[in-house]
Length: 513
Ligand code: ATP
Image 1 (cartoon, protein in one colour):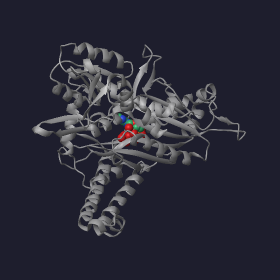
Image 2 (tube, helix red, strand yellow):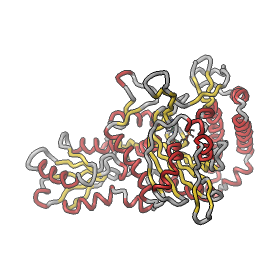
Image 3 (cartoon, helix red, strand yellow):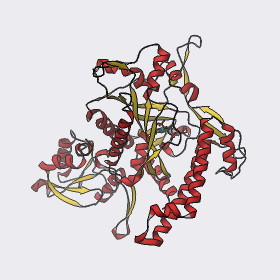
Image 4 (cartoon, protein in one colour):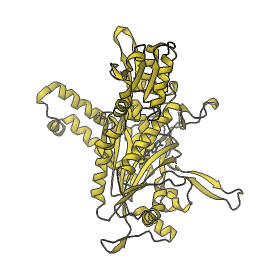
């Protein structure tokens, strides 16, 4: 199956099994807004909990916050969002489709990368064991030509963006002969800047009402509260503040399901450090965050670091963690060293001192900040796309199974009486009532046992427990593993402990703690 079909199947499956619906579907939907249904909401909550525990529970010097979505409008002046939270947009005159000019160019560069990769794979096959990738990269003329071409494009692109030279961004698109994927034409408009913030009015009357924004990132709620938290929590630098919550961006092109939405959820942590130590902390957080991702067990090869081509004016280091989605490697999380830019701006605009008194240094300073910022929805998509599998089984049958990491699965356990009579449902309910205090579990008695297994596979339930006639005498049940489909007989009295070991979050946290 090609990746495009795979992605379509994942979207279809997410709807069919109650993970994700289009928002306001009965009105033909609202673009780039999605609703999480009964399964999706559990998966999302489990990922959020995993992040929260890894950040707040495992780090003594990180505390949580839940700031309001609405903030004083000056916040967004100070942060630079009112003046500069823009994306460059371009329209194709024939298809009337709108694109992000920077994305068109980045996709062009990604195609060059793919060409290089193809050469490497081809050569590795040809040379077999004796293949030396570094040497090949340094000497092969096709590779060298493509690397040079990409570097030239990158340089010109970054320069154009840095100088706000939108005419040259357009010229680059023309020079590279980039065509609209819909119309195939190269008939482009000028490039314009477009502000991504949603604005609304606060207050009843137009008169006296003021324009407020739906926050485009959660981070500013942390910055404006940093001193409150530091003082009331008696925090000593270095320390962090973690927050999860909705953010809103009027994205120019919202495609690719929950990858790019106009309303989405972020999980952000700002780590306040002594000036001069920020690059050490930046490296530490890069490693820690990658370890968090890898501990989910989706496959370490699915992640890679990507250094930003162009640093924001306030940052002195920035890396993305990218994930191998069905549509290629794309940003999942950003790790940024933001210097003292935000706090200094808020000092300037509010007229309040936001300095920290360092008792060890015996002086006051504005802390530097290292930020980790991850999209919760993108993580849900990463988990779904890595977990979705269509498997051929013996006997010519097949199944769709979501191999979601057990500690993140929406339902941990299904309790299934083999038949709906002979006292089996009653026994099954007894076990259900015993285990429901530990985990989110379900009871099902409808349909054949085979069909019930398939349904649980499709929603990613890691274990099924079957209660049969022997259970009534031997007090044991059959435990079926979703991934291997192996079954084992286990005593009821040991169930709680066995299940906790298999689906609990503790061992995952221990592996990164
Ligand atoms: P992109 O380059 O993809 O637009 P960004 O660099 O603007 O993303 P950040 O501002 O660094 O993103 O936001 C931090 C994280 O928030 C991203 O890594 C991503 O996971 C998530 N995110 C950003 N925009 C969206 C969106 N429109 N929909 C879903 N998640 C998003």
